[in-house]
Length: 345
Image 1 (cartoon, one colour):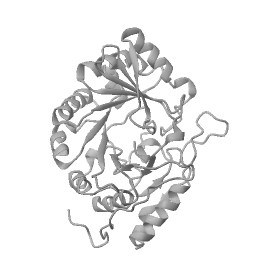
Image 2 (cartoon, one colour; image 1 turned 180 degrees about the vertical axis):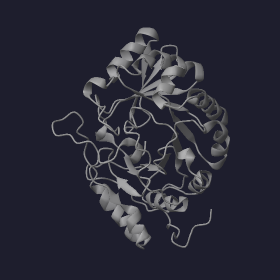
Image 3 (cartoon, helix red, strand yellow; image 1 turned 45 degrees about the vertical axis):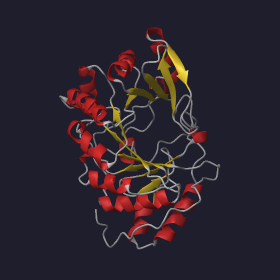
Image 4 (cartoon, helix red, strand yellow; image 1 turned 120 degrees about the vertical axis):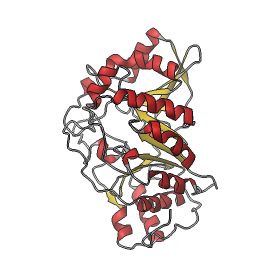
């Protein structure tokens, strides 16, 4: 994809790594390329407000990502909204695959999707250079799934997408399930069996206060401890070691070694101390934490003509101000200025 005159190429990767003022190395960039979505999941779009923020051109996302890679980012995850809705996605992935990190390797490129369009796109995504895919899937029971998405026929579309992604080699294939008590927590045991039957990694995520409405409360959260105990009564679990210190999921396998479960517990067992992430919204704002109250307009500076050297220096200063932790459940906690779908999953 040819770059526009607005977007000169970024120079060779810098030697130093991005770090914040708490000593954490930042190597994981999540980039939302749209806040549009073809689902209306009730725990996410409780207000049904739809897209609220503009999208950049695909080549503009590329330039912004290049800046981060030149500063030591090694993992790039494309998110939304629903990223498979974006035209030019395959071109973006091809160009990202040509980048090289500080150690001469190409970035680890992954994508999070609801899976609805994945059946026909899995093989082209793999050919373009995508390494892995994570599918958001909040039930394995078809009626429950479609009650959540509010889209008829969505379950079979996602199931076909999961199987196509696995066949294309977009592995390890992860399935993310957000659990809400009294809503879909009856799916836990079914997902454990799904992990084994479909040869995927199922990851349960504690529900965070990131929805458009005011659905969240501590009582709705299904905690890591409860999930482990419930699965263990049906299929005994064995803990697995973390791949790296900044990994967000606690990993388990089944006693017979077949299959894997992960649990992401930001509410009951926060992992902020090892956080390695920074986020870029669909309109080009840096968010140093999911729960940030402040956004930093990187795209605005780029549009104003700031050279790459200046932009890199500004990114370094911005990351230095990354929050130490979130404050979910504490007195005075404020929800972030955007909901999850408008931040990037």
